Length: 149
Image 1 (tube, rainbow, N blue to C red):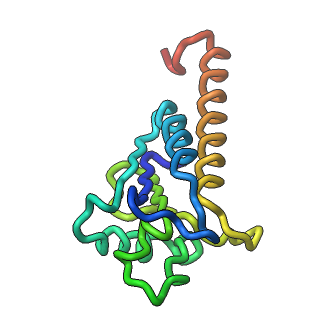
Image 2 (cartoon, rainbow, N blue to C red; image 1 turned 90 degrees about the vertical axis):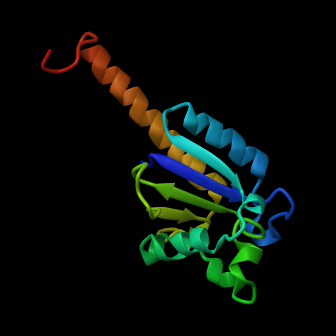
């Protein structure tokens, strides 16, 4: 599970077809995840003067099989694609981490299909909610008492 999720989008440039991402749907999913205690942030890349540092984190930080495929756009500069033509979701295991643990969209190793931003958020929401329900159930089984008290 992730403790922090950053979504990079553009208020001026729509995403391209093959990698389309519904900003409104993502916003709703991030709100739902945020209500479960995960820090979520939507960042308009139009407000970032130099996007290269963030692009670099996304392409170098996670292990190769967990990185997004920004290389599909080799003919473009990072400032032209990152968060603009290709939206980006950076997921951190711990709030203080400098590099993301996973980045979306990316190729899913098991299914060999593209794992979209929306699919990644829906999966995380389900996992986070399930973990929360299990914790509540365990606490109720203890009669509302914390272990050792």
